Length: 164
Image (tube, rainbow, N blue to C red; front, side, top):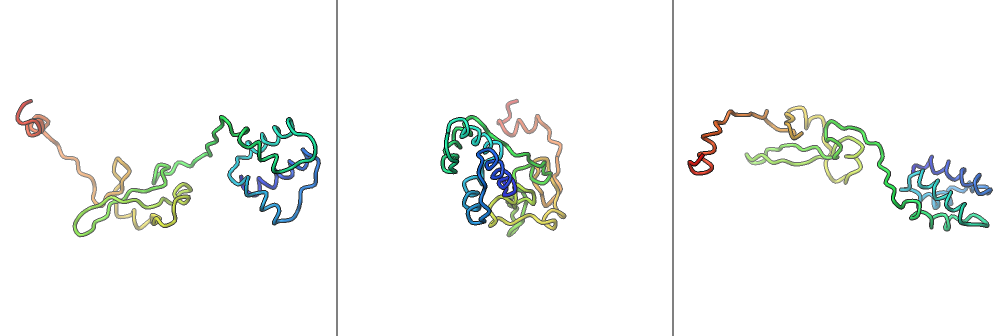
């Protein structure tokens, strides 16, 4: 839940449980921490469960006890963008030449998924991609992939010792 969604949620709780939410930023920051990774729909369901089962004055700690019940059996997948560089993996595969040998390695993508990964991994740049060719496995190669015509019968003879 974003901070803006949380502020709306706090005002929703104030209306639902008839109390005046605090305006103190430190208190709101402390309240936000447990809700940081809770989807807004789950938070609203937590409030509904609290309303059904609890009586008396509103207590945030009691509300948080309903988190597991509200999450049970639900999975929320945020909408993801369709990244053409990494196919939503967050990593871009590249080839690199080092001492005459070619190695495959990964850089972080510039998309939202890639930027959520470890910042110690180098982010791919436009210069990394401009002189490379993308192959059918979405790996950016140093040289354009070549496909040679292979005589299947000769190939089988070589591989299995002459028996076809």
